[in-house]
Image (cartoon, rainbow, N blue to C red; front, side, top):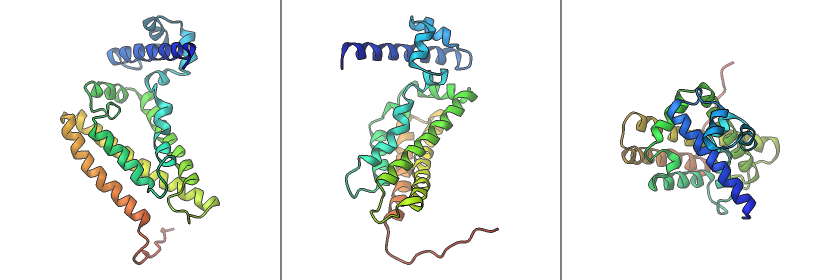
Length: 223
């Protein structure tokens, strides 16, 4: 990385750190972009050059988060279940007390800022939708089974599978957050959630790849 790119990354990090400090102290909705700029020692225009919106200042790793599950599916070894790839990555993060999961001190304060701000809760939902969309594209390009139907039927299947996988992943993180916010020790919360997460993902994976046994009868939705 060249000197120019290094400096840009340092400036971006300094702005994001200054913003987070203010958000944690005063709340997201009470802080202006101008105040963030003063705290970081830059102009307001410079802040907007790096972060198009105030919400981007809080979720400064948004792009990485949105593409994480899709990258796991795209980069998994041939023949690996996409559910297993997501499961193994999540369980590994839980074992390692990954800070991005909120297993480090300070996470409850970060989450409380989100809970107190309608704008951040809305952005969090948008991030979840983008995670699913990116995952659906990855599943369509790298399907669980080579025999999966191409074209519109395959694309629709990918969308539905992405919702299932991403929804389970999101449910695990939501339960982890709930337990820690309720006062459970992070290690205890992580262990409890990890056991349930493994069971949930294992059932998804076995259902996706179990070709034996009778096919359940088709259920018709009521009209």
